[in-house]
Image 1 (cartoon, rainbow, N blue to C red):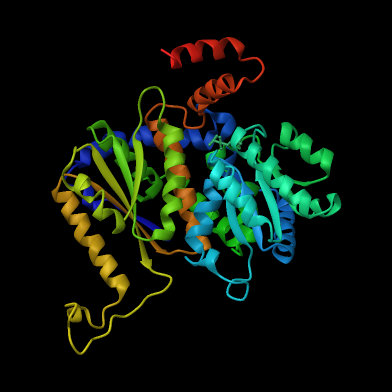
Image 2: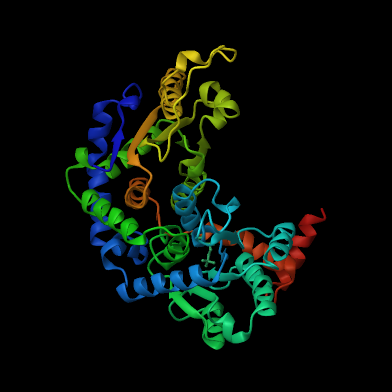
Length: 449
Ligand code: PA5
């Protein structure tokens, strides 16, 4: 199999009967996903995406990607939350670490730059400066079409684009990914004649990476989106099977919920490759938004080791014992380097002669696993063969499926995110948006107390 879950490093913390006791609940959760009759059932479009996607749109995505590759040095991807993390996770995981520093000869694909995922004036201003002498296109992504962060970025970056190109040329350079028929962005695109791609109604932001939301930027970056979908399709076939003990998505959901119920309220996703940093971020959104509600849920955190062993390592080893770790182990690195012998062993590293850097990385992982278990931190290990489109597609679907199961096990609706709205309402009030006048007065009073 392309991904295997090893839970032997949890054995000291979980007894067999605890797993047995949760099998029924997990099966019921799986049943709800299959039948589409659980909480949030209108947002299960992602379950069948790997087989049920719009093939005509898929071809249009490839054509648009070719066009952007031919006429742009840079693609600015504007979106926030579920409308950018998936694309960024996949692109960074699969790209050369130095892609954005490379010349056109070294990397023929456009550089992907993300915007609209913060309200930093400095970031936006510097992006405007950077784009002045670049050939570029924009992919603006917003399901609702009204999110403030991407809307502001789109307004500003579009102006740069329109100062540089004619209105006609802009139609070849602005691509809008949004709702099929409603929302400000859809109206905007229709009025201006920009090509549009769809965020399906029944797919929430954090589950949307395998729709146009993720696929267009990923294709522009030169990745094989057919392979990504094939990997997800294989995972879907795998995780719909009934034998719980052979079903890694179900076993993962079961283990994390057992750990949660005995006080392990924080899950740290651990990667040993810096290019997986945004995969960590994608994971945190997926699980945080799906499970953190009704005053409960596992808090998803993340680290990149061995980097963070020199910062968070102390806490994980010996701080508050409310954590468990899920470690992603990638069997074969994309590249490797063998350490050579030096005449004078000044740095004392000659004992590693003939070993590769990845060998050292794997030993760091094994050493850490055992140390953390000894420190009282249960570890789940996900092994994947290598980082490529197929395996990443597989792993994305694994985490999505397990997340749905896990949310249902913990009795929440894993597919809504009402809590995201509260800050927005306050912000609109404080900004003086129409309709929020009373709230503005109330909030300002509280701020001035
Ligand atoms: O998962 C979610 O629902 C959120 O993170 C959204 O993706 C995010 O708020 C962006 O929303 P929209 O795509 O409507 O601009």
